Image (cartoon, rainbow over the protein chains, first blue to last red):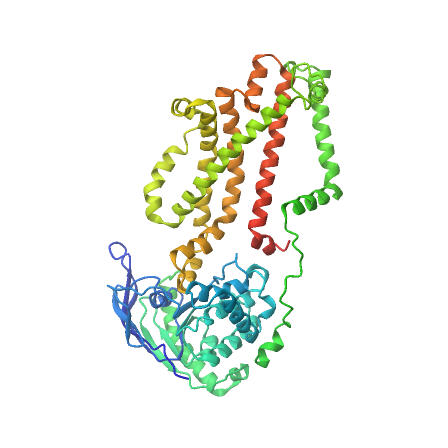
Amino acid sequence: MTLSGAISIKSATKVYDPDGARVLALDNCSMEIGPGEFSVVVGPSGCGKTTLLNAIAGFHALTGGEIFLDGQLLSSQEKPARPGADRIVVFQNGALFPWLTILENITFGPLAQKKLDPAAAKARALELLETMGLAGIALDYPGQVSSGMRRRAEIARAMINSPKVLLLDEPFRALDALTKTVAHQFLLEVYDRTRPTVFFITHDLDEAIFLASKVYIMTTRPATVKLVLDINLPRPRDFRLLASRDYQRLREKCREAVRTEALKAFSAGEREM
Amino acid sequence: MPDSVSRILPTPEVLTETDPPKSGILYRLTLNLKKWLTSSGLRYNLLGVLGFLVLWHLLTAVFKVPLFDKLPGPAETVKEWFSRHPVYGISVFTPEYYQHIGLSCLRVFLAFLLATGLGVPIGLLMGWKKTFSDYTFPILELLRPIPMLAWVPLAILMWPGRESSIVFLTFLGSFFATVLNSWLGVKSIDRAYFRAAASLGASEGLIFRKIVWPGAMPFVFTGLQISMGYAWFSLVAGEMLAGEFGLGYLIWDSYILVQYPVIIIAMITLGLVGSLSSLFIRQVGFRLIKWKVKEAGK
């Protein structure tokens, strides 16, 4: 498996409303994310994690610094990234198109990019749904299936495009604890199959350590990287990992670092985002 | 499939549409009619109507309340309406009656078609492209509040002949409601859908077809129902002022000629035709917004 999708973030800075309130969301934030790495970014609410994700996705421009993808300049102040199918986003509140069936949602990408003709796209989508255990809901509309299913379908919609980078913005936030563990297992299986680079935002520590190869703990706003933790737990992983001593040790380490930042954010009266 | 997943998920069902094509407008209508006829609500519907008729009869024919003493009662109206030889020349057996209805419907249809054809694209574009709404919004907000009646002199001055001025007035009535609702429809679409589409590599044209259009559709159809109401409202005003035929004209003409039962007949007819046209739009909407219906679990 040749891996691509190395993301190099160099002194990324983002000021919202530079002529007015000047809210500094990202301050000189640098990260080196290896190809095929499962990176999880943890930080207090409203710390600027989503700002960084949006810059990589190409939804807005940085006000300073650069982002490189596989050595190529992706985004800078002068030349912001454009959204593209090599970096697909799975959104916080889910963004399956409610007016398309699950199957039509999944074929959306290949058809939009004219990579496959409709028949081939449909065949490929059905095959993917089958391997992902979602074949039963292919003809349903998103509103007809459970939120856990919707999340999985949205990941499938991204993966059919074989993106170099999968960007997930607290994708499982709204799921209940049980559904969440199922969704984690699902995501790990998807990841192990093709090893895209994953950029995953959360503030759930268990989620972070269970999924990640590396956890990036961010400071409260303006966000910079406070601590990088290597999670050298073996893959494939399953829920039994949660009971292991290594896991507990890493979790403790993480908790300390996050707690100080959370307290800072709390006393600064940071708004939930 | 990995074991852990297959254990949790239900077995995949067969991937074919098992429902025969049961989504036709006619099918829906008969289904709704059947539901209504067999529901306990029908009894109350009928009782309500009956109560209204009795009240009307008492007020006009029995007590002759001063406020209502010039009005024909229900019996007199119905008798005239279904008479083979109507006193005032209008009943279900006279061709003139249908001429009035037909012409009014044709005017509303034309005006509504124009208003929809122009209003929906303009509204969608305003919601989608900020530059376009920057250009057009002030004009729209200036023209929109002008009551339709204020347009009457201009309509007569601008357009050759009565027909076109009436259609123009009717058009104006529904146009603004359509634009506004289509615009709001786009505004109601979650921004994440636009981002997701761009992320998946969609071109602008595809975003319009696959996001803007279907996403705004529920609002657009609500807007069309409202604008249909405005169309009838404006039509009657236009016909009263400039018409030669049509239900609005008939009402006004009957007033001048002291043919009061005809006023009531024409009014009830307007109510019926108006309801039918709204019903029609709702049914078309149901067909086009299948996902909403399924989402609601119907």
